[in-house]
Amino acid sequence: MPLESVNFISDLNSSNPADADLEAQGAAHLRNIKKALLNTFPGASRTVGIQRIATKTTSYAILQTDSLTTFLVDTTSGLVTLTLPNLGQSDSGWEVQIIKLNAGANPIIITPTSGVLTSGGISSLSATRRCIPGVPTRVIWTGSGFFCTRAGAAPVASVIEYDGAVLPTGFEWPNGQTLSSATNYPDYVAVMGTLATFDRREFVAAGSVLGLSSPGRLTAAISGVTSTVVGSNGGTEGSALSLGQLPSHAHPAFIRDPKHAHTVNGLANPGGFSVAPGGVSAPSPGPVGVGTTSEFTGVRVNSASGGGGTDDVTGSVGSATPPPVVATQPTIIKNFILVVE
Image (cartoon, rainbow, N blue to C red; front, top):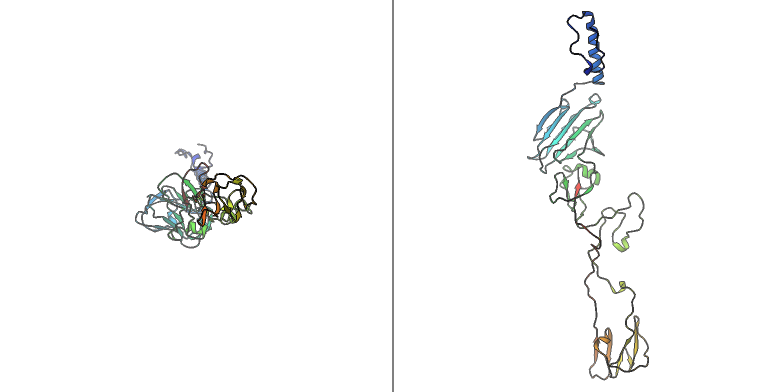
């Protein structure tokens, strides 16, 4: 029987060789098998394992022989540390998968026996945290280092809008809290250099310089917020205006005398006189009329014939209630969650 044409294992014909074939053809069949194996597993230099499942509830030192194992980890009883093995260049391509089963707050900590690892875009980590349940993390040995995949694409220390009311497992509230420890949050500390979080409660965010210089749209002199410092904050819900902040404006030009002799701001028998923002002007002749209290608003009247000292007619208007400076545009209140792994 003629030999089949073989490149990969799937090309082998399980019916060959036939019982009637000459023994001399045996060498050709062996060569076909070798060719198929080498083409199907190019560069194979160690045992090719079969995907296996292992369940862990306590810390475990992963072995070189655990390659291709998927570890299902339950952290209900506490934090679980998985220690990666010491591997060499010949182990290039070694990998395992890690999946957290429970929704509890206790994390999985993945750490090499020695050296560092890379988690997503964060390199030189002595450990990395995994707490989000149900999402596989692949740990791959490249021959010189470990690379660990992350649950999401958002960089660590990102803040994401979130409409839910309950904090999802594996995230934190950006509410100004200090996270528990660098052991629990190694990725966040590597990015931020601190366990502190910014307080995003009831603040509206404005972009910083974003790699350029300040365009001067937000100045510390007026707002009290330094736009070149990430995390700088300030502002208030309302602010009362001072007299110097009022717009330039004019008052009524004349106040009438109420039919008796008196002095107004030291001017005797003024008749009619004009009032300007800078004070009372020089008197001008005019008829003596009947005045009312409202016509003396804000003017100090020194009585000369009323027999009784000094009267202050104030009649001030306005209030000290701060006008609102927020919610002048359509606004919706949202929750935010902080990416920490």
